[in-house]
Image 1: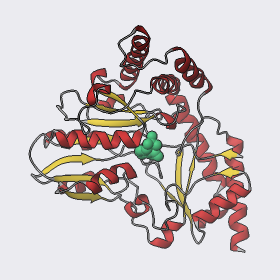
Image 2: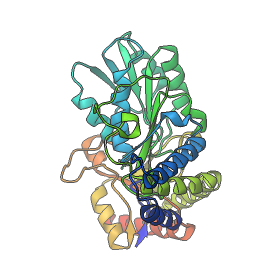
Image 3: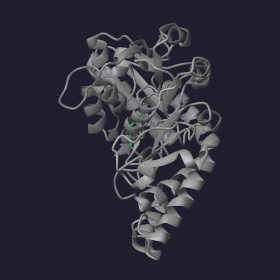
Image 4: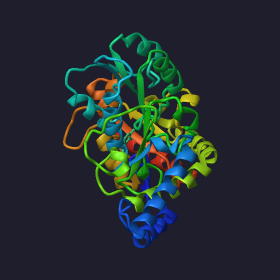
Length: 376
Ligand SMILES: Cc1ncc(COP(=O)(O)O)c(C=O)c1O
């Protein structure tokens, strides 16, 4: 089986796995325990915090470890709303944000929320966003990279507007950290999140940065770990393994980016024979992560295409186009303004460390075969 679903999750890097085992067996103490065994674990934790803060270009005081991107998004938004820069009850969010963002927004009481769609390039229109701001706007939340189509939002511009208007800005970096250098953005946002399992680290671990100048109140009062930001014994082995994975992937950012760009081109070329049926949802190359391809083949349901590819030995995805057990289109198809038929055609192909040119071309040729058989 050839894996083309790296945007969903990645395999654990062997070196990160070794670090995980070593930290679990040798640094197993509770990082909050006061004895030396706890102290060793605490030292490891703080080393990881420092290393990740360096990779991200942030003050380590604002970095908290979580169980992943979803929890990070939840805690970040709650933290920002607990310390707004001004009074008001209006929030602006992208329609295609991850479900963890929608989950928080849906349960807020008394807030008015403006959701921004994508333009035809899968990008939020910054002018539209600016127009949506009211004197009551206290928070903007816009992801960096979309997990389904890989478009890269204009975070600098959005951050600048938020700064000028005295509004908190949260950005979900889960799909960008380890794929793009985010260091020039981390200083511009109020908070951001990342996740271990998207970068060959373990599942169930991630982080959130909240600018230390923000005096947030804890969502769960009384917690002692992570300065009260989050409850629960800290997953030090997971954090150590994630740090190893992050160091490795950050050393290869440019090389990976160029490689994925070439693979993307090779894949597109292999679809030439069926190009009249193929619609790729993408932005221009500077705003497009090359490793994520969100596309539709007219007249063919994405779920069927995914199962056919699976039968031929390729693991592709429908994104979260249809959430399990539900036939409602995903937020991204809504953000793109697709009708329900088009939404169901959506598939996602995503590249990662083991993807090579040969496999990409084979996948493309297989899709061409499937489409030709279907159409005839
Ligand atoms: C953009 C984005 N945000 C958040 C998450 C959630 O991260 P985690 O699985 O670590 O909770 C994901 C994972 O699919 C994602 O793609």
